[in-house]
Length: 212
Image (tube, rainbow, N blue to C red):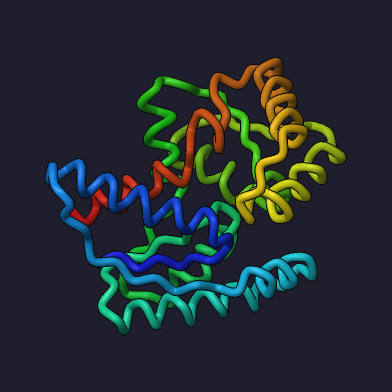
């Protein structure tokens, strides 16, 4: 049984639910569904704490959510967002079941493609705080980099919570993200995490492989 800590944001959490069920349906060639538990976080509260830099409080909230899922029978936990993995070290120490790290799912996929250099687009915390880039480097030897411009990273930070997290897809925002991806390609990126490498889908499929 997989426990999902979602809500950050609900839109991507829905993708996790869909991808996991689709993968299991495909594996069984019928409508078999896996046992899942979901704890839905209050994204407004999480974003408020992020803006204040109160990551210890975020870690505490995630630890509480994970404990409730564990009590419900979860045998492994997924954080249904990239940024949430900033608190992975603190939360993982509180559990006796594994948290499946999104960096592992992504790293394996990148290495399978034979890529050594990738670009990364995400929230400013994911781009600037190093927790995902360092994971890919330390565990998979993958060099990764983000848009150089601070203003570009800030605009991506605006687009993600204000639009993408709520299922809003504006043509001008899509154009902006694609421009940033092109800049990463010019810097030497062989692929882009969150684009060519869809971490949500990869993470979901990792969970299905684990449960199988």
